[in-house]
Length: 341
Ligand code: UD1
Image (cartoon, rainbow, N blue to C red; front, side, top):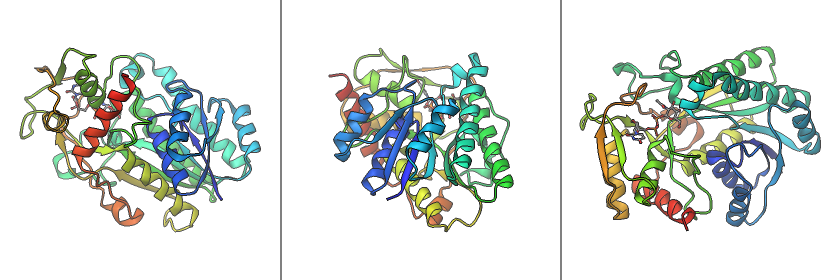
């Protein structure tokens, strides 16, 4: 059976994707340097799937070590490249670290793929490449204009997409799928894997669950004076397990040779925008836990509203993010309770 190399496979989206790949019969090998995850995640994956995934503790920037991984697993037929730093604020404070980590790792992965005759890559990109789309581009499809990145993190996603396109232009054998994620949330229904933010969470859902668990005094809602129905920002929150399944579909499509373009791009979202207050109220309803919150000023650099038009992924990948938001929010709460025990 085909083996997929999953970089960043012990991370949040990576670990959920490894589970789905293994459950569909793929062999995997995870490469991760544990910079933002730990070996416990391997136990979680093993507990869900019943088999421990192959794992190599390697930094993707280390060409010699990556070379050795490809040599050790000659059955690798494709790569899903998740490994990257992803904290927007940190990227503003330490741009060079972000450019080194996020750009050099992709370059190294592509070089080693070529050396070892591996020609399929799925790349984790982000809806951040669209910035705040003009009203006529909402919901956002893949043809909406790319806008200047608001942070070094966002810029690394844009540059990485360009690196892939340039390399595909130069190497006719390369096939790539760029997946632009909207806002991934939730945890595996088993509560054996989930999101593990470092320090004070910057993202909405981990802050909500930590407040529900009593770790944070109150949630700050960043602005209620936006041009949206309730004044708070709107995002397309996608269940991480649904998102993980899209990666399996993308891999399948490339391996079957059905991709119609050398580089295919898909927006991965639900197609539905939810406001911060809607998320908060639904979370409280579903869990029965009260979340103290305060409306505060806008967060600098925040986008008012963005949600996906996922029609291309629905039609071409035969995939749909359809887990009800209530179940998604409950999974996040179940996971928070599990890790606080
Ligand atoms: C953020 C990044 C984006 C990145 C993504 C990756 C910014 C401006 N954007 O997206 O580039 O790709 O994370 O994870 O940093 N909110 C609150 N209170 C909180 C936290 C969040 O009200 O304590 C609100 C935010 O204002 C926003 C929504 O919740 O409206 C979602 O925030 P978040 O989870 O940080 O995601 P994005 O801002 O979409």
